[in-house]
Length: 201
Image (cartoon, rainbow, N blue to C red):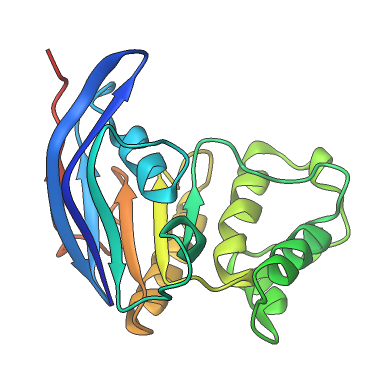
């Protein structure tokens, strides 16, 4: 499997944010996206997830499910946590597992990986910012998808949770998944390819 992006361009508010961006990420690989604020890192990840229509270029998952869009084969962890406040921690994960036909045992694995077991019966609305972020990240395990698009995934979490995320990313890649991340945290991605975006004039 390969995520192939060719000559991608995007606009925001009528302004060209980036253009002619091309890269390939293969199964088991990772790409770290860097650049100053306003360079388009979040816009790029949102375009890959199908939330933003590119101004030009193509995005293809080669060797993936030909009947699904790139976004339907990806998890996008953005700035919003995408949680249902009235549902418990466990119910939020169960929702995502059912929505994407998660694997047996995936909810328990997600709770354990991000140390959420003691919070499983609490509604998401009472969680702290760090706990909400850990729950949003646990969704990655509750319902497996091959492409992970991570936008500053370590926001609001502590060092122990960063290490947990690094282990989860390593396991995902070992299983043939691929990752595109806008992050300043190491997360075991020191050897990953990098793409630097600049602020458009």
